[in-house]
Structures are given as structure tokens and as C-alpha cells.
Image (cartoon, helix red, strand yellow):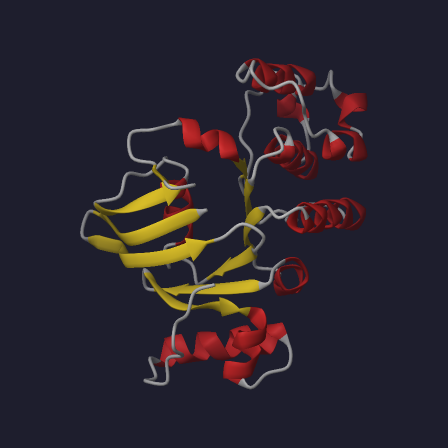
Length: 247
């Protein structure tokens, strides 16, 4: 569904992505991990068309994304921090988003209703708490029932009940066969919500395979220790780097 081939990107003298290759398939949920500065955010922004790569290609459903915008209709994006016009009301924001896609008349309002945003539709976005902004961002990501979901730290700032509601929704969409890409520092969330682990280090793919394969390679029975071992391998730059494979 998303194919990334030989992707490279520099910001000044800083090489952020280096001959980057990845395949993301429908029906899988991917945990995208790596230390700060590893290239995760740049990869996501490149997929979304917010960053132009220096070389390489990204295809979504077989179509090269360079110079095109129509493919974005297949993607629902939840940023880590939602930034909205302060004076706009919640209801106005959702009405505006619907107006931008007049061809769509079937909306996924599960989270809008579960988070009771209908009761807050007249609240200005600038007055919302961080957690409520997260609810707005989550509801917007799912609004158009996209085939691809890219969720950046989705449960950060949410209260425990709201976090469970969102996780249940993610699991439901995964069962429908959608492609879900999640970044999170909460490893328990990633273990619960994903079946494929991707670890990026120094702008390159260090590991990409199923979570079960990750546990087997590292000799760990739990996700968190397995990720910790990957981090040790990268930081120590051992030659025992695991063989990459792609699902």
C-alpha cells in the first residue's frame, strides 16, 4: 500500500534519511520506533507530502506521490500536537473539514461521539486542554474512514478512559484490514496495537519484521526488553545487526 524506495533527505549538512527502503501493507499495524533524530518524523512528513525528498520515491497504492495530492485522501493523520485556529469552535472545524471533501457523505463519527465532542461543539479550540485537543485530533484522523492511519503519539495526554477508547478503535480498524502506522514512546501501547516492529537508527532501517520475529532474534519473550536490546545494539554499533526482512 505504501512503498518507500531509496529515500534520502538532507537538511543542510545533516543527513536525516539515507537510502531508505520500507514496505507498508494493508492489514498490518506498524510500530515506528527509534531515538530522537533518527528520521521518524521526516519519514512521516515525506509520506504526507510535507517534506520533499532529495532522492528516492514513495508510492501509495501504486501511485508516485511526487507532485500529487489526491492520494492524501486515503490517509488519516493524527499529529503529536494538534495546532488549530484559536478562535474556531470544535463544530466549525469539523464542518470545515467536511466541506473540503464534498464528495464524501459517509463519515466515521465513532470517536466524535465516544469523546462527547458534540457536547463541546461550541467551545473555542484555543480554550481546550491538551487532552481535549488530542481527542479532536483523533476524531479528525478517523473522520473520513481512510484506508491508512498515521498516528503520532496517539495516547499522549489522554486520560486513561479516553486512551482505552482510542486503542479499542485502533484495534477495530486494524481488524478491518487497514494499514496503521504508530509512533509512541509508550511501549505497552505498541505491543498492544501493532504486529510489526520498525526500528530506525541514524536515518536507516535497522530492523523491520514482525514483533514475534523481533522477540525470537533478541531472545526476549516480552516487547519492551526486546526493544531495549535493539537499542543496545545500535548504541554499541555491534556487528550483530539482525538480518532485515520486510512483511
